[in-house]
Length: 364
Image 1: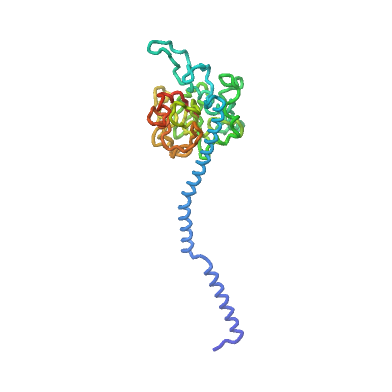
Image 2 (image 1 turned 60 degrees about the vertical axis):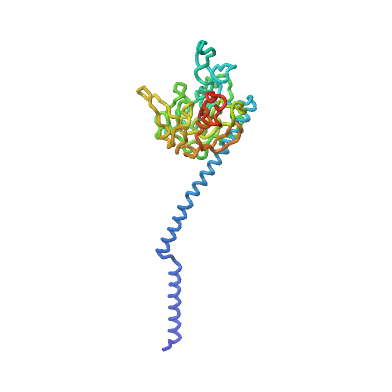
């Protein structure tokens, strides 16, 4: 039976509302659809995150490579004014005619077996006693300590090797070697450097700076762990906010070397001073006396001694270095053995003149 006009109109209105509500219900997601969308998003994140991490690490490594190249430029500018020599801190009373070695005490008496005795240590072996690598930039290492904050981990630690009463190097110079060749100090900090260790042999004359304290996964007093920050002023430069090490004793023009060798690049978190560089296993003196063989490389996550570890700027991958000819590159091999080993490699500085590497001093 056909509906009257009024009833037909009402039925039509009801159908319209029902269809509208049904349309609104169809516009939303079902629970299954929502779960599928979430799963797809999670899958995409899982695929993209490693790629984003690699891109971030690549950008940091590139910035670090730029830093090392900038320092290489500064070093070459310095060498142009000093007969091809790269900078070295002056040692106390170096003999003018003897470049290779320096006497740190009385020279042994000549004998038939040793007619021309030399000093016991390389000339460059005292570099660490002059404020470490920071000593090339400032004589007044104030650092970034907030003296008003008693909880500041840097408070009371950083103090200069050159006191107020003695504001000069051993040869009475009062101007550091490198600041005048630099526009700023951003090149001193690697973007990938998450941690630096503060070893007090850089600041304390009485500490055995040559051996220092070996690297440990948890810092052992007096060593402290800090996050490096770019120094705002030259006096804020200290050992813990320089992400690099330097190999003193090299020249821009090395006639006794077959190929260019690295001189400035990523440090490790260990005490890269002298023979301890690159987690070289050595001996330390424990509190009770005697010898203690260190295992720094294992603590740092390195595959072996003389390699970089997981805790370092670029992990185990390697390090950025600038070479004596000014070019910079990322090195993945064993730097110590390849470039400074005893003729182990044609790239070694000792390939022509045996013992040339003993003239050098690694410092951080």
